[in-house]
Each structure stands twice: as C-alpha cells, then as structure tokens.
Image (cartoon, rainbow, N blue to C red; front, side, top):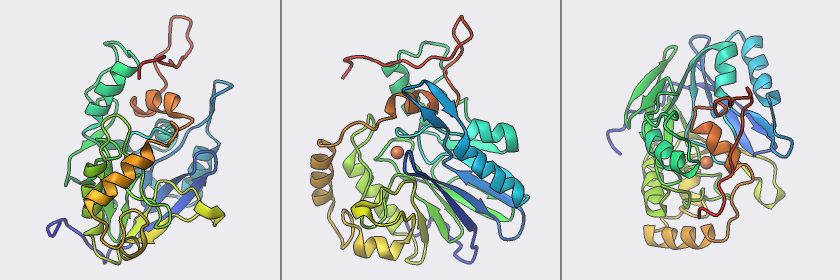
Length: 295
Ligand SMILES: [Fe+2]
C-alpha cells in the first residue's frame, strides 16, 4: 500500500476503556492541538437473560469526555459487531458527533435483514448512519485527518481507521499472542482477511495499532496496544511471513471449532440499525427476534 496516506508526525492522544463483559475496548481519540475527539467502538450494556439494556460503560466514557471538556466529532464503528451492542446513539444523544461505518454495511444489512426477516421497514441502504465511508475516504477530527482503509474478511464492512500514528484495526488483528479474528460469519472470508491484514502490516513499522478486543490469552493482563513491527514479528497467525495458504487452513479449521458469540442475536439486530433497538411494536415495547433452525 505505498500510496496509503500516513502522517506519523501527528500523534493523537488515545484513551482505552475496557468492557469486561464483552472484552471490547472503546477508544477516545483526541486531537493534541484542540479539544476535538472521536470515539471508536462504543458499547451498550445488556443483560440478555433479563431483556434489559443499560449504559454503565457508555456513561464512564461520557463522564471522561465531559471531565476533559472534549468535543465529540465522530462516533466510529470499525464494523457491525457480533459480540456487543453499540452505544453510539446513546453517546450521540448526550454529546453529539456523527456515526460512521463502512459503506458495505449495506451488504451486512441485506444479509441480516433476511436472517431476521426484518421486513420492508428496515432500510438496507445504510441510512441509519450519518456517514458511510468508502476505502480511502478521509475525515477531520479537529486538526487531524483520519483515513479509512477497507479491511474486509472478518465482515464485509470492516474498516481500519488510520489517524496520525495510530490505527484502529477493529477485528482485523488481535494482540500478537491472540492472533486474528474469526472469518466464518456471513460475508466473512479467511483469504480476504489475510489480504486485509497484509494491508495493515504494510503501514509503517512504528504505527501504533489499537485492538477492538483482547481476551487476555493465558491469563495475562489485558492489553490493547501494539505496533506493526510487533505484529509482523510475533503474531501467532500472520507473523513471521505466514503464507495465505497456511493462514486460510489454520483459520478455517479453527473457526469450525468456535461457538457463536453469546450476544450475537441481540448484537446484530441492534448494530445493523446503527445501535438503535428494533422499532417499537403495537404495545410500545421493543423486541428482539431469535431465528430458529435457519442454518
Ligand atoms: Fe467483530
């Protein structure tokens, strides 16, 4: 990717917030030259068994933003998450900012609109989001420029956001000892994921990489920041020049052993709507569906 624009002299201040229930890291990315910030991959809490949502995690971030007098310009989703619900609309209501996701959200909406029989009132054109990013698009956070790299494979809409010397890779990569994310969701593909990872690893060696998840393998402490150089050297799935063929074999065999994420049913239905609950039914309540025996 020699022509992917990078400016390593811009050094955003990055604060991570770890959600213990879903092992998700939400980031506040601040412009060092102003009070502008973006929030990447926020979380809405859910007690699925109780059918109750809440906002403890999002409130922690809102408190941080307010305490530091920050101005939220963007609420970025690296992809449609299958393991946690987005808190973006709640944060937007409290703090403003535009919600952005990759343009292939329309592919994801089409797929899951059918899986959940969402009906014609569910728009599959991405219109629930404020901005649909195309590969190579850029946007401003105060004085900083963020640039979007399409990194599909885990899902079709996955985007890596490169902001100065920091890249937010979503579920493209995990920490070196965690390897990579699964590629077996509808629209996922292991070979495509491998090629996307090569694009990320073609960024400068010193590029800081921020993970969307960390499952603390081997019981180590939770970590979420590494570099391109460290991933190239040590990533257990793609490091040391692992070939596409080796990767696809490993990824496919491993994915066949994985259970579905605990929160996939609520997560997809909410996240394909940009974090909104499904529309109210006749009695004024919101409901989730569970498709049975479809796959
Ligand atoms: Fe994911």
